[in-house]
Length: 391
Image 1 (cartoon, rainbow, N blue to C red):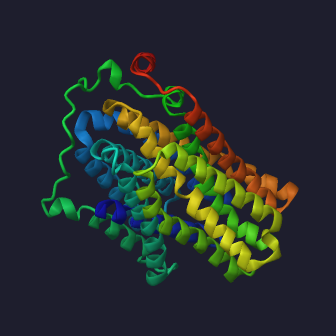
Image 2 (image 1 turned 120 degrees about the vertical axis):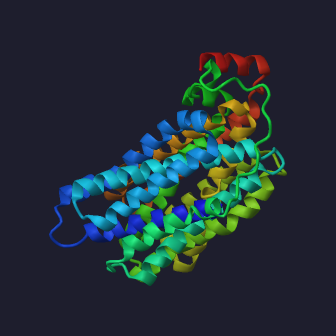
């Protein structure tokens, strides 16, 4: 978790630093668009390439390889401002972060047990959220326009190697005697359709999390401006969502280990839909009420991802963990990339509350999927084997 936190801090710093640099006068807008596209493109590639790396080298060695790639891409910004080079560095950065998430999430699923998987995932999500916050604080401390900003970001990524330099090793994973050798038929990629057959609510919830976690932070400043909030109030609105998500991670993870995770997702979906509908209806009548509603929405919508991942892992054979993590993270990243333009278009044509048509729609889909998962017959071993054969 220390390594993950440090690597994410460096990545968050780089994202902000690159945005500041590209915002300088004289930078071609077309170049800005191309460079900014590199990170999500690399993220998609990283989701696809990690499974064979883990199958060949194992989780720990793959993680070190990913950290090395992330460090090299961060150092690139220190030595050159050549824009084609920056495109490559951002592409490598996106690949590295996606691969790191796949490695970490699949390893947690393999290491954790049914009674503590939700708590472990909540700690992991809390770690990444704190890392993003610390990254922004470091940017402010170093100075957004400081020439040393890229160097500090690279040094932070370098510090992620500290546990390895200290001689620490990852705990041993439980023995899996029934697993086939890497490269065998059952080790192929577990696709979205097969995952949906096993855990429909997980597939829907992960895609919804991709929609939510991108749009809520990208479009909330636009929403605040359009409804007449001051710049300071808008910043605090975004901060409120972040704090709500961080505070809720641990209790939600604890609850998900003690109650049926399908019921948890059903409740989270219902609360999120209600919060979205209330914000769209009466959110502009009172600023304090708006902050309360955003806090409630952040605490529920931003905690759907770990609960959905924990439930999905409980339905899978251990040999599919890495492939499933890659597929789910791919769905998450597609939600990230595909929907901001849709949400912005809705807001332009229907007004600021239209932002919550998309967010509320995603939460409604999670609610419906959770109901379906609760009401349908459990997947039996023969059906599971049939799905694996199709993979």
